[in-house]
Image (cartoon, rainbow, N blue to C red):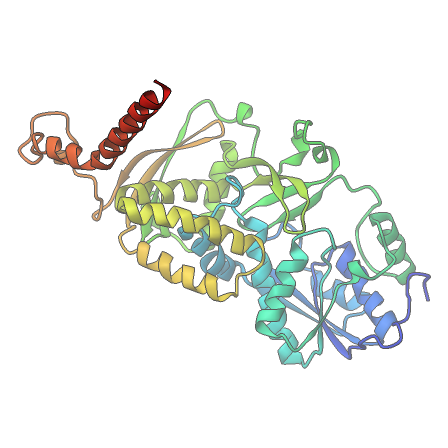
Amino acid sequence: MHAWDVPALPGEFIPKKVALAYSGGLDTSCIIPWLKARYGCEVIAVAVNVGQPDDLSSIEAKALASGASKCYVIDAREEFLQEYAFPTLRAGAVYERKYLLGTSMARPVIAKHQVEIALLEGCDAFAHGCTGKGNDQVRFELTFQALAPHLAVIAPWRMWQIRSREDAVDYAAAHGVPVVATKAKIYSVDGNLWHLSHEGGAIEDPWNEPPADAYGLTVDPADAPDEPAYVTITFEEGWPVAIDGERMNAIEMVAALNDLGGRHGVGRVDLLENRLVGMKSRGIYETPGGTILSTAHRELEHLTLDKLTMREKDRLALTYADLVYTGQWFSPLHEALDAFVDKTQEPVTGEVRLKLYKGHCDAVGRRSPYGLYREDLATFGADDVYRQADAEGFIRLFGLGQKVAAARGRRLQEQDLEVSR
């Protein structure tokens, strides 16, 4: 037994079978022998494909070689985009002005499938490889609480004596865990079909400009083509359905836009964000396809939503973003907000043409059969629709409260003058 294989404490819950959220990386590969050594339990690995850049072709063999009794590999890429990323897109949810929530949206779909496998296999506990400093532990565990609250949760990073990547590499070697890893790790990287993020290394100092190797999906905007690219996105009730008139499924669409946006340096974000656990962290996020889609969707809403609905939707989008970021996907409020969003999206059908140029993504055209813009009303030319003389009465009534308040102010000033005399 390795020095870090500490037996369970007296009175500690001893699981018989644990469903582990398994990525195939160093940490979760080490968790398998650690769970078995501490509890003598069976470990069921659950690997969920949301389009992460890791090679999942050998992940089942790796999990079994690390000591898991079974490994489920689930392709959830279409589900991730259609049931998580696109609803968040339709809500207009952006965390702290910049972040399109790529990691945040992926965690509940992974945890949901982990719950399904745990119930299928008769597990009595979940395990995950999230650290005690991050947001992901909350996202996983709130999903567990919502969908299977009767099962226990084991979070090794909050319990074990492994404190660094160096420790984990040594532990893996001592247990014959087949991982390809070294003790030198510059960044913590997370990726899926929606985005790629980097944290740690040189970018931990907020004064440092992100180095070139902090990006993986996008070219430096300075090196992007000197000629702009134009792309047209079609929406039906807020759902993106086509690029340049060609209908595609969600995976095809996001992959194509990631490639296009990446070549033009679109979708880079450098964010100092407020983590749920109370600290600030710096992340470099790349969301080229998501940036194109969110820009297009927002512009189409400008055309199709009335003022009051758009204002209220913008206000609730902040709440929606907080719910996604803090792992409350399976909450009653999130369900209610989705119903609100669905109603607002009924007229959001049409096309938006965008110009991509050296990191910029700008809408240059938009049209919809349900648009509220009327050229005959907005024109500065002669028209027979808008009676300009009507504006006089409108202004008089619109400013009535301000006029009454100003009169009161003058009376108070006159009273002060009388007193001072």
